Amino acid sequence: MKKSLGNVLVVDDDPDLLDLIGIRLAAAGYSVVLASSGYEAMECFKQQHPRAVITDLRMEGMDGLALFARLHEEAPTVPVIILTAHGTIPDAVAATQRGAFAFLTKPFDSRELLARVAEAVAISPAVSSTETAGAWRTRIVSSSLRMDEVLRRARRIAENDNPFLIIGPQGVGKETLARTIHQASARAKQPFVTLVCGILSPESIEAEIFGAGKTKGAPKGLLAAAAGGMLFIDELESLPPIVQVRLLPLVRKGVPGIERQEVLPDVRIVAACEGAPTRAIQEGALRADFYFSLAATTLVIPPLAERPEDIAALIASHVEAAGNNGRSFSPEALRLLLEAPWPGNTRQLISVIKQAMQLSVAAVVPASLINYLLREESEREMLCLDEARRSFERDYIVKLMQGTNGNVSQAARIAQRNRTEFYKLLGRYGIEPATYKAQGLG
Image (cartoon, rainbow, N blue to C red; front, side, top):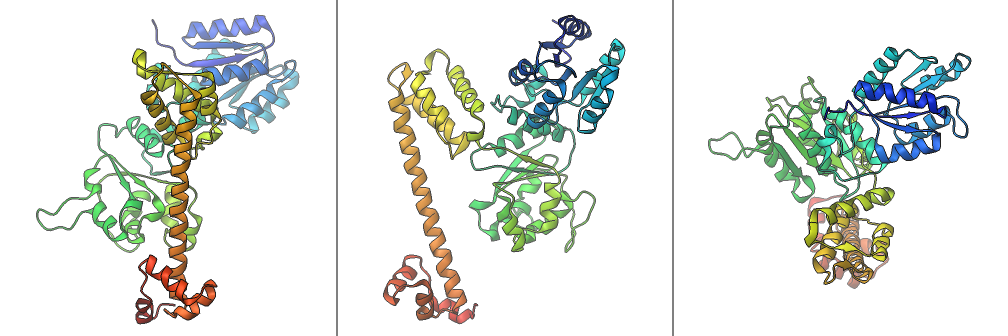
């Protein structure tokens, strides 16, 4: 079977013209999806993941301009070609100025149509994992329009060699997306190395990245291990400023470090954080030049709760992967999974799916087991919140000690606690007032 040049959606309420365009595109080697209205086109777009759209301008119900606006809102990087009669050329020109890829006047020239479609498909990567051309993203299970748009941008990022930033909440798959981009890039055969800053002390991060020193036999750092490939830096806001300075030449291509220059391996840098680290930049913990060099190319992964289609896709994928030895989910169990908030995102959902399939004694996983597992997850989440409260309390007391130069009486008054209670808090967190008096911290 001849390989398809790409999937193209054609929209027109004139059945004869719709069939004609479909025949021309199919003969040229494209896979064609036909829709006779804007509403039908939106459904086809969600299901078929086309790489380009051709739409008539004048249609009953949702016309071509309204369809373009809807598509542009959901997937702004998908090329849309608008077909128009001579009397509506100004409307088509206005749409082009708002981001439509091109417009063609009717009756159209077949060669010009095919040329425009070829140009559109060339700049629009395949994001459907069922297409041969979409095999690059098989690590990522999704079917939502929002993730389609993230993947289109990711595929284009893979085609250049610039550093970039991935933003998204915990468990959403930032490292998986970075690996996917790496595997689709020219560096695919070279190492992919990961550094999670939050689990290391600031002092050890520099040695971890650059190595323990130049003495013979000293361990090499992650940067050397990633030579020729990619270094993924997670929890960017915890990367020490001195390390940021040393890595500046890699995130600012061709620009030497500001405070220190050294020969660095050829490594592509990608960093990740949960949100724009505005506070870290304001406090100087994250250098603005370093961050904005990375953020010049940014991918934002939305939380799983905002992509319900992907929840269903992940469940189906794991059931299919388990084969005949796996389990299916009852309708009630599926409803619970689809409606759960998933604060831990993809990582949490996959954990619950796997546990449910392992623990179920029946072939069909019941809603009662899902309820039980979700309660367990909720309790674990509450433990995390309790840890966060203790962390906040300790930081607050440390700041009180700094601000009062270790004066316990003054700190207790500010915290509205008696001295005995405040001393207990100091003991709970191992905070010694004399340390702050000796250092004169304020």
